[in-house]
Image (tube, rainbow over all chains, first blue to last red; front, side, top):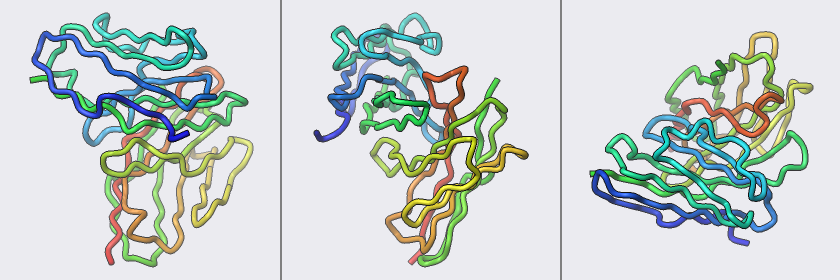
Length: 115
Length: 113
């Protein structure tokens, strides 16, 4: 297994367009997380799944943001009607929950630029 | 609310010296702490973790110290190498937010040859 994979690596879009990012976690991991990171800041939690259940989504930044993990494997993050403030790195991470000692394995992220 | 922060945004050390990166947290309920390293163009990478029932844990060239009294965490890197140059983040989890790790803002470590 090569780790967490995110596609695309870079996305440039015009304001008002919809974008969708994909994350393929490490295959045996049951938890999948989405984070957002802006320059000079630490990752900011957005949402997470345990298997196919979305256990917390209150931190999704607005109702324009939505995430799915339909079969408990890969996940998608969609941003509708993008705004310039959505420009950031979107990171996906996965983990195997066995105790509270939970290491996150991150992908390399999708860099979004909204023009 | 909870927050995690680092004392210094940048740290510059000479190759071969030891590095110490500090972090403060605010939530007394935090019971698990993690250090991550992020290189340019990559996602954060796990370095070392520590539970709140411990005050020290050692890995290969890295040591994490936890002082729960003052809510302070540090990462010590021995014999710092150029490959250690990166941004370092501390993160915390607690039983009330078991789903998410809260990250600080990062310290950029630069190793001078």
